[in-house]
Length: 591
Image (cartoon, rainbow, N blue to C red):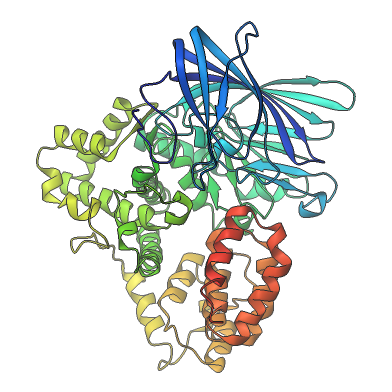
């Protein structure tokens, strides 16, 4: 066996899947997809083929022409799921697996009409990162194995499907049903496979960019993301041509567990970005940047996740710098620094998970997930950039994208390419300290600006200083967030009330600010914050907000009572990943 990914049964010595041809039928009553997944091989195959599955019921497998293919489902493993082993006859060019998903699939969330904005029709969306594609279809669920695909999705009339693929038409599919067809010609890792179904409406933002959302949300979404085309143009100037034809976006219901998911051709976004003032569109810049750093060139396995997210945070802030200037970029680095410090503290007892090159055999990637590969990884990229010089490094990035275009690479491959381009550069920045040692190296880049220093000083003198000028309530969102991050962590009720009054925090539509404020207030047992926290936790399922808010509530007995009560109500509405994160936090509460 030549297992190349600790989180997959993928074996590089076995036949390689070149593409998928999928037929999926959505059953909203039973909350399952019935599927026919045809795997087309790069060459005529024979012998053993191992596929990843999790929670799938496999009914039968046939080769082209309908000849049955013997198969065996292995025992259930908590992280990997069940291996599906096919015994392919000699000369096999394709095999079709007839199967059904589980209602409990971590890769799919089925929402009732009441959980949507419109309250009329149900909703379905997938979330396959990191290793949840195996809960949607049988596949070689490893980023090493890239595939193109075609799909047909059969739905009840009135619902619309979108995918991480180009639309190829739709037509009636029997009484009361409609079939939507899609084609993804570029090869992608399985974690970038994506499907969403609901009452959806689309609005064009440019000749190659459209936003989709529920009808009740579409106008706000179109306004919030109106400048996306200018982001695409800036990114192309920095990183080279956009290779995915279109950049469309979908605003999902509030239970979506992430800020965004960079599915090619159809970025998935949380509705918490709809702040009403375009203050959170940096998330779009991040997901767009993935079109180069992550989608065009992917990390080979979850152990090299920093190649995806670290490079993308760096790219996002280069786009931000080009659009809004040095100071805005410096404030963004400052916000990220605080988040990195909190993540390093969170993994204080598991320092091995703060390395960039991780070793995750026996570790669920969801349990290892944190901001570390994002922010520490981005700082490593900056260290390389500063040592090489910005102009030289920009040329290197374009060369790197061209060399590994539509491929998945390891840290070792990246380092070899750096060394071939800049001999000695890795030693100059002490790459082993970044890649293989925990924590943040002593030579980590620093990001400074006069405004960042001013806000930090104001925050640290909050308890003893004269207070804030009335104009502070008009600060830009990033300025307010920096200020909140740098405040003393221990505040009394009067100090919390004074802070809320000065900055008008509780009524903010910006969820980054609102979460930072509620976490600070709740951790100090400030009871006026409990009800807004309750409303937020029952409305929003984004893990970035849910996890720290449950942590903050856990600091006091009164807060823990609120948290337990809220969780008992909200848990059924959370995505499985969010529910698991909240349960993990609450398991640490004192008895």
